[in-house]
Each structure stands twice: as structure tokens, then as C-alpha cells.
Image 1 (cartoon, one colour):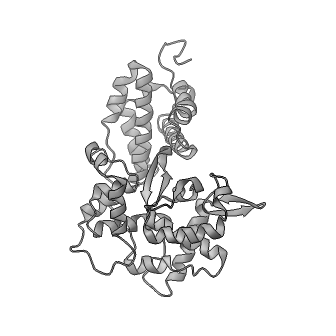
Image 2: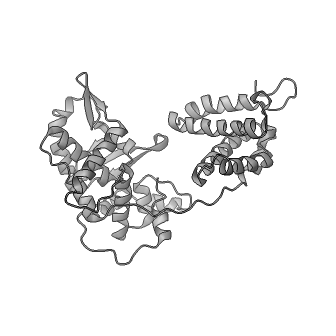
Image 3: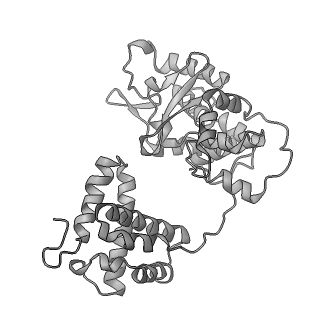
Length: 346
């Protein structure tokens, strides 16, 4: 029942359960991790009501989602819980999304949703953008020497992670059917929200992949199309690598690379290779919107007509223009605003 039988008002918990257990997983097809993040945000607001307002769950209604309560909640998260501005923004964003859904389901909640949408969180401090220099990138990509099958797998993994600027989850989810090595080669990545995009491959990477497939996927034509490109064996069967395994591969490479390149950062993560590829492309003069499309980033300020113009061939030329072997410095140092614009590409 979507309304309270006694008052006739929309029932918060009925809407919330439908949002978390029906709409998000079945209609939006969002990942369990994403749904859990939204649930935690709603639980955070309920926790505030219980702790600060002394309102038990059985008494929570949409009346508690007015601007007064939401503003007090924002202050509570900052002053009492000491959440970072980023966390506060994420919590508020999740509640706004829930209220927008509720307003679509029940017209009496439209004003509530619009009032919440106007709320702003404290500005987040800008952090310096972290990316690898050309010598650092070269050292990391060469860290796995290929003396063992595992080392050869890890070397190919790092090359592809950098060359495609893929998210780590996109690389771990890669299957044989996603590869197309016929010139001009490309692969299909499945990113956030199960959205796919085609990413061109450089000639050198295609050559590396052919050697890799010959060793790890012999007789490719007879293998299942869903076989993972990068795998470990469990009970004799190839299984997708976990994101933790890929993170360990990157960290091990970084540790080895420091022997030849001491400036390799102490704390490195998979996403840094993605940022580095974007920076290498940008330093070669590739237009920012093309880089955004390559990374699968949707930016409402970028016109739809440009997206139609940025073809796979254009992206291929952009990728071929940037390699870890760049020796010439950029014509001019990037401003902090341009760096921040570039690295909003998650």
C-alpha cells in the first residue's frame, strides 16, 4: 500500500522499498553496490531523525523531508559526524534522487522534491590531480618482464588498462567476444549502468594481444565467446580476475618500477593509469570532448551534435597520437581549471 490507511498521506517506507528493491535493480538495472550506496544515504537521514529529532522509524513520513529537516541534516553530518564535503554531497544527492522518483510516482510530492533540489552542499576543496609522467608510465608498463605466464598476463593487463583508458571493472569484465583485432582493431567496453562503448586499439597493442591470445586462448574460434580475456584458474576453469587482483598487479608493478624510476608514486591505483592516458591525449592536443567520449564520460554541457561527430575513427587517430614514449613536453602548462575539467571523467 503506497498510502497510509489512516491519514491517506504517501507512505515513506512503501516508496523507499519500491525504490530500492524494484525500481533501481529491475527498471534502472543498477549495480548492487550503487543501490547499497543509496540505501546507506537514506539510512543516514533516518539515523539523523532518530538521534537529533528523536523521531522513531515508525513515525517517519515525507513531512520530515522538508527543507528545514534536510538543512539540519546537512549541518548534523558536517558538525556532528564530521563527514567530508564529498560524503555530504553524495548523501544529499541520493536523497534528492529518491524524492525525484517519489514525485514522479505521486504528484503530491512534487513540491517537496523541487524544494530539496534547490539545496546546495558546502563547496568541495579541490585536490591536486594525480597522474603519471611519461618515464613513470614507461617504467610501470615495463615492470612485468614476461619471464613467467603470470608475468606475461599481468604485462598485457597493464598495457590494455593504459591503452584503452578503461575502468578496472571494464577490464576485468572483458570477454573474448569484446575483442576485434581485425584492422583497424577495437574492443567493446561495458561500463557503468551496463552502457557499452567502442574503444580503438593501437597497432602495437593489437600485436601484443595477438601474442597473448595465442598463449592464453589457443584455438580462440572454438572457445566460448564469454570466456574472460584475463583470468585465473579455479578448479581448472578460467574465472574473471577480481578488481583487488588487478590493484595488486598495479601495485607490484609500481614497486618494481621504482628501482628504475624513483619518482613513481608510493600510493598508486588503477584509476591513475586512466587519468594518465587522458593527460597524454590532452598534451598531444586532442580535444577534450573526444577524450570524454573515449572514457565513456557523459557531460551535459557537451552538445549532442559533437558526440555524433566524434566517430570511432577520430578516436583511433587520437589514441594513436599518444603513447607512453612521448619525449616532448606540452606546449604550455595546463591550468588548474583545465586539469579539474579533464579529471571529472569518472
